[in-house]
Image 1 (cartoon, rainbow, N blue to C red):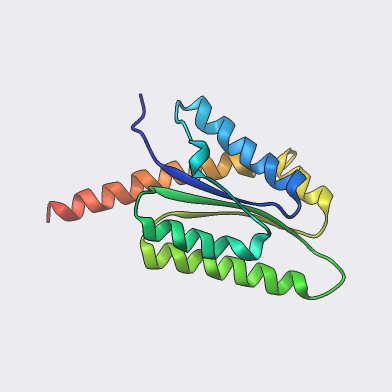
Image 2: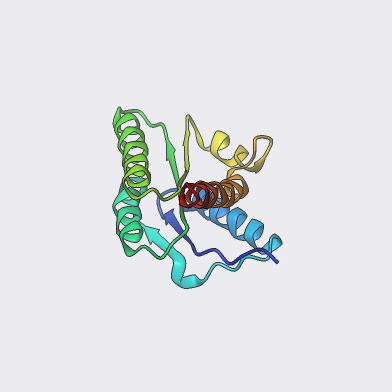
Length: 152
């Protein structure tokens, strides 16, 4: 039996048909591995731009082993896409670095909806499942580093 991990999942409601597929893929993967994610650890936000502030608030609670962030930013006719992608990636990275907590970037940044769906179980794999695997790998790696530093 795998050790119990407490993992938060933040999911954007914007492009919900895509983001729910990402979340479901992660939940399915955790279930396959015998890891339960409680409903209390699932957080919905209006859009991708709101993800980092919620990730920061959750990191400050110091109860999670990892935070997975799901969103879908699809290019439109304006430069809004570039600003959103930049701010969300920077915000998630900042939370991870400042908290030393794995903040897994499951934000799809695609040119169109077709590309996004291809990453939710299509020919480009399932990024939701990949994020679940990444979270577990990072939890183990950071625990290993912390353990080896304690022996120095």
